[in-house]
Image (cartoon, rainbow, N blue to C red):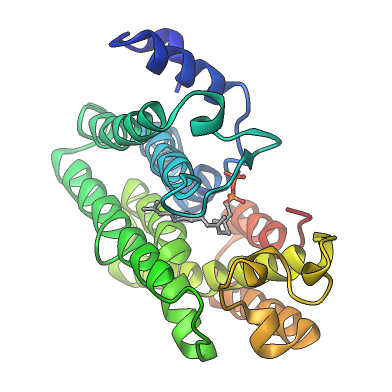
Length: 276
Ligand code: GRG
């Protein structure tokens, strides 16, 4: 979101939005949404995807800002810069997260190129993935599970909600924009479930490989913070193999889709073959 386009309810919030716009993330979820719309083969779908794509990124950005707060993961750095509550203050970070969440739904609801039914379906999909049955529910379970040793299945369940749900939603939302059939939407959901899990497992693998703290050499930053990780539960190589298997399974689900799905295939590959 361009801060210059925003109403300016408070200097702190305006400055924080400007700060955020200077360090964007990889924009993976909007790219997934647009690639899914394109994969359906509905040429117009792709051009209609801009507002929902922006919306899913706003939800993701809000979640990272709140996740970094002292009451949650208490992180000082994000996207190579001090986190929002460090650069500004906690109240600003909470308010900006809340405002981004509201803006996401406003963007979809007011996109007049989409039909009323598409807008309702998009809002419902994004809200479900963000809320108690999705990201917020998973975050709550993750916090409760800190300092507990989980089984791999329990960890998968938490991550399916905490990070997987929004990735899956991005793909299904692309399907909604592209007017996918129920079968195509079910396939996009299955692709999202597999690649979302693979993405999280690879994040754990990268965490261990890139962490140079004493404990991190064998466990990684998350494990050092008392969290269960795939690497701790499965071992580094098995975790990496599991992620690559999930990636292969996700691509196999769309093997009969045409060249329109090539951008989506490329994105799925990037999600498991990345540095961070
Ligand atoms: C606060 C309700 C609430 C939820 C927070 C998203 C989330 C839930 C926690 C993030 C925890 C985390 C860092 C998980 C690792 C995988 C992951 C989602 C990384 C961040 O996503 P990227 O790599 O980030 O797409 P960028 O910065 O590129 O947007």
